[in-house]
Structures are given as structure tokens and as C-alpha cells.
Image (tube, rainbow, N blue to C red):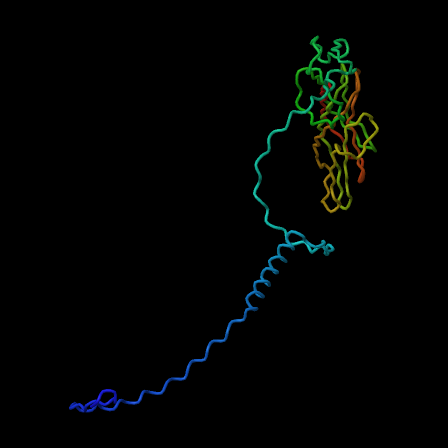
Length: 280
């Protein structure tokens, strides 16, 4: 083969196998949509605006609204624990001294002549006396003690009971005011008839002609249905207390009467009287 003609000698090698066709190319993926260049700045602006609004509300509050109505009181809560004791306060100013109880004329002086009540020549609290109280009731009379005086009388005499009759009497002389206690016993006969009520009363009095009902009289009744008895014996015992207002001689009387059923055989037969004086 001549140069310049582009001819090559045939080769003795076998010819190459034909190449397989390439697979079809895949469709290209869609390109992502481009991000908005406006959305991000708008969100940031909104957050900044909200923060500025909150800061403004805190730093620059709005005007105060009107006060609402007072609500109802709630239930009382439990009592709290006792607090600690506070410090002691300062002492107050001393008061003015009062009037002493013995200072009767309130001149601040111990006037022995008028304020020594107990007579020990010293004016002190022992001379203090309160206002005089009301006089109490006389208590029961006890037995005769030192300074008491006694008088006694006895009579044995039959005395018919006609109206208010005096049976016995006793006198005693006292040196001063005080009390005279008079005791009496008697032996009496009551003539009782069947069908007639009998009633005998005896007293100790300051008059020989008085036979009053009272807290210290003695009384005995015999009802009419009781059988006849012309010698119904009775031995009354009675006493009374009398106040005498000074020295002197005082006489007391034992009297009695049939206040119903009086008859000729109703009689006093004997009696005793004792008078004891107690100085006031």
C-alpha cells in the first residue's frame, strides 16, 4: 500500500464482538424550590415586635383601671401560734400615797388624842376601824357564866283559873343593861267533861294580867271526845328572854288562862321560877 492513501493491511485477528447498547438515561430529579428570601426576615421582625411590646408593658404600664367591688369575706383561718413575749416596758410613774386608815382627819399626822383607838399610846394600823355594821340578832342564851346573876322562887298554892290568872312571879336586880332569861314549871289540874273542848295556855310576861299567844307560850288542848276526867294533870315547862336597858329591879309573871272549856275545878297547884341575868 502506498503511503498517503490511508490503507492498512488486513489483520489476521478475529473481529471484536459488538458492544451492548447503553441503558436509557434516568429522568433528572426536579430541582428544589428556592427558599423565599422574605419569610425569614418577617418572622424575626414579629418576634422582635412582641418582645418590644412586652418590655413596653413592663416599663411603661398603662393607666390604672377603676377599683372593683370588695369581695365577700372569706372564712376565718385557724388561730395562729402564740407569739414570743415582748420586752418589758419601762416602769410607770409612782402614784401618790393614799390616806392612812388611822388618819381620821386626813392631816397626815398621828394625833394620839383622837386617833389612838385601842389606847396603846401609838397610832398605827391597830387603830384602823371600818364602818360600824348593823346590829345582829341576839344569839341563843348560853349557861350562866362569871358575872351572871340568878333569882329563884317557888310557890305551892291552889289558884282557880278565872280568865287570865297570875300564878307566880319573880324579881331580879340587875347592875346594868343585859338579858334576863326566865324559866318556869307548873303543876296544873284541868277538869275535863266528855263533849267539852278544853284549852289551857300559859306564858311568862312582864304584866300579871296578860296571857298573849306568842313564840314562847305553852299550850295544851283536850278534845271534847276524850272521856271525862276531873283530875287531868299537866306539868308545863316554859321560858322567855327579856332585854333590860339598865340597872334596876325587874319583875316577871307566870300567867295562864283557859281560853275555852273553863270550869270551877281548873286550877294551878304549884310552880317554880328561875331568872338569870346576863350582862350585855
